[in-house]
Image (cartoon, rainbow, N blue to C red; front, side):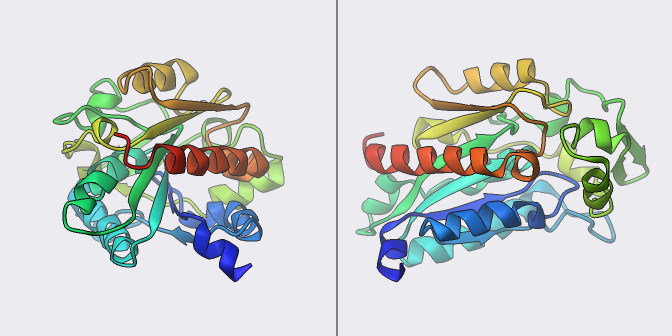
Length: 256
């Protein structure tokens, strides 16, 4: 198993807003059984007190993780959920295989998969991605952004007990992260994938499709019939998508 794990790329799991990385625990366990090393990354902004953390802080936090893996010359697959797509897009800058090879390094980010995640053009903010206004289920109080109607928005394919369990783990986000602008478009230099969640009430499928189209027709796509939290309701399907991301990333390594 150890030898197999060394051959597999490392999977970095990046959650969305309001949610902790613990939601990926089942997916992480299943990937481990398949020999994939994994890293869970929580955002500094999630539940931050005071709520002054910005996108840049979350980006730098993820970059530290990626830097360590790159220094170990690992192939890396980044799986970014929801808001995590904005963080990951910015954080992978300079970690593509071609750029690292210029300095004689092996490895790098071989695939960035957006799991029902925001894909923003450079210079656009998450608020721009929301259409310039808060959504009905977002409750803003000063510098805090909280959620409402979580069972229907985030967990509409879970049982009521499971909904209650995961709602209890959610927390606030700083308003500042919604206003910070994205700084990078990784799909020009890193193979990218979009994992669609067809029953998502947080980012509807029509919005997912529109964002994915910004990356061009050459991206890899995968579909899960699930809510905004497929790592809870459909972990096997999420693992299947990650396996596809890893295989495709290895096949395309260095070709972009």
